[in-house]
Each structure stands twice: as C-alpha cells, then as structure tokens.
Image (cartoon, rainbow, N blue to C red; front, side, top):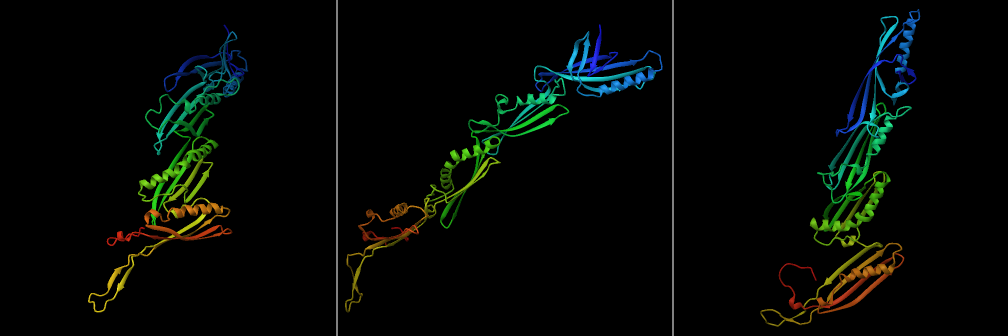
Length: 446
C-alpha cells in the first residue's frame, strides 16, 4: 500500500502521522449546515546516508516545508495507490512548528490543517437570520428589519470563493417574502398591508469569507405614507383652516417618488376639501367654509427623498373665495326702511299742544345694491357677468318679504379693456308697518 500526501506542488516524504477530527456545524435552529475537518500532523525529516551533506539536506528540507505551508489556498490531497482519500479541499494551515534539530541528521515538525465541508448545496459553514417588527409613530404602519449573515466555504479549484458562496446564499434569502410564517404576530398595521422595501446595508469580510445584509421594509396599506397637521384660526371675523402635510412614497430609488406622486394625484389632493370642512366643524367654525377653492396653496417635491409636501388654506370669507378668472368682486348693500307719515295741527288755545294725525300713507323703502367685478386678463366678459349676476341674485330683495316690490333703476357699465363691470340696482318697496318692532334690542336685519 502506497500512501502519498501533497499540499499544492509540495509532496511530503515520508508521509507524516496525523489525527483527524470532524465537527458538525449547526445553525441557530440546530440544523446541520456543514462539517469542519481538523487534521493535526507530526512528521520527521531523517537523513541516514552518513555523509557530509546530512546537515545541509536537513536544512533544505526544513526550508522547503516552511515555504510550502506558508502559501494559502493550495489544494490538499491524501492518496492511496493514486486514489483520492482526500482531494479538492483547500485548508487553512496553522500551528506550523519545525524543530531546529538536535541531531545533524534529523528534524521533527508539526502543523494543523482545517477546512469546512457543506452539508447539502448551500456551501456555507455558518449563518444567522433575524427579523424585527416595530410599529411606527403614525400607528398605521410597521417598520420591519431583516438581518442575515453567512460564512461561506471555499469550494474553488483555483483561488477562494468562500465569500461568493456566502453572497449567493444570502441573496436567495433576502426579501420580505422570506419572512417567518405568521408574522408579525403582535405588532399591528392598519388594514390589509403589503411590504415595501426601503434602505439596504451590507457588510463584507473578505478574510473570513463572510457576508451580511440588513434590509428595512415598511408594512403599509398604501404605497405611500400621508402625514398631516391641521389648525383653525380666526381674525377680524374671518375663520381660516390650514392643512400642512407630506406624502412620502414607499419603495426604492425612483419608485418612491412615483408612489408619492400617485398618492397625491389619486387620493390625497381630492380628500383635502373634505378634511378642511371636517376640521372647521370639529374645531368650532360657526359659518360656512368655502372648500371649492383654497385661498392659498403650495406644493413642493423632493424626488431624492421620494416625497411631496403641501400647504392649503380655506376660509369662511366669501370675498376671499373667488372662482378662477375672477380677480376681484365688491358688493355694497343699503336698505332705507319705509316710515309712517304723520300730520301735526296746532290749535289755538289748546293746552295739550298740537294734534297729531296718522295720514295712513307710509313712505317707500329703498334697497340698493352697488358693486363691481373685475376679471383676469383673457377671462371672458360674459363669464364675469354671469358670476356677478349670481352674486347679486343671492342677496337681492325677494317679493315674498314685502307688500310691494319693484326694480326702480338699474345702471351697468362695462370696461372691456380693463375687463371690469360696475353696477347699481335700486328697488322700491312697501311693507306692513303695523307689525314694526317698537321695543327690544336693535336688529339690523331686513
């Protein structure tokens, strides 16, 4: 029986004695993922020729061994009658020790070799994987973090592919779809949610052949996260509702901004008028807030951050809520109430003074509306006139409130160059004065 042993191009002669230990490598769950082989060698260089070259031969043998074992990544073989007992492995050489020699014709040496063997096809000797789930401050989404790492085994005939094997293994296990079944089990997100990948980080240890990846995901009902603050303020009899918010898209790279823009266009913007109306009611608004068009609005984008930020203001002041194209509109109303006429007669010698007689014919009241409307450049005069007529009709006197009512005069002037209309309308009316209020608090209503 002929046994030979090689490390790279170096052949051991004679073949040293060795002990072989094999250890099962297990992951955190106790499953076997690899084998670690450790061999300890003890050998002797011996020269028995008895000539003058014994010492130099021993020195040359020592030097050759040290030089061979100093090389990394060499194939290790143990052959029996040219058949491979061990081959295709690339061990780590350690604990090299060569005696300086007591005898001129002998030198002892020891060293260790170790390598790892995959169980299955993953080609790794160790790995760990953890998932964490944390509810975000919006109480609607969950931040998920996956941390995974692996140490690869060198299976290459040339060089060292341990790191490549670790990376290949990791890449098959990253992704939200690989999360543990039935999780999250305790943290809660709003509604039916999906996982959107966010930031990634990775760490590489070339010498150890290890690779680790950390990935953050967001579990969300939508492909965007909408945050908003709202406030109500009042000044000079006008109440204003202000909405400030951000739409942050989920996903990586340009996908995040695309999701933010889609969320704004398809969902968020359309909801703002209803939100403003609700805020006005909830926080004590007492009139009618105009939400058909905001009195001020701004929209800013940040493509790198994948977000849009906005601000909107709505008021209950009708003068601030003009349709697009109407630059300004002013309206003044005056109501000169009718009065009862009396005649006074002086009677000579009457100690009680004059005699006052109700003539029975009251004066007519006068209801006057004056104002002007101005359109933006290019806005149709006909559209401006239609808007002005609608505003006048909303405040004009109604015949049901009077005994008689007639339109006495109407004056309208149009300046096409300035795109402006000025108007004055005067109604005359009578009403039943027998029911006129003669006591109590003042009421300036009609």
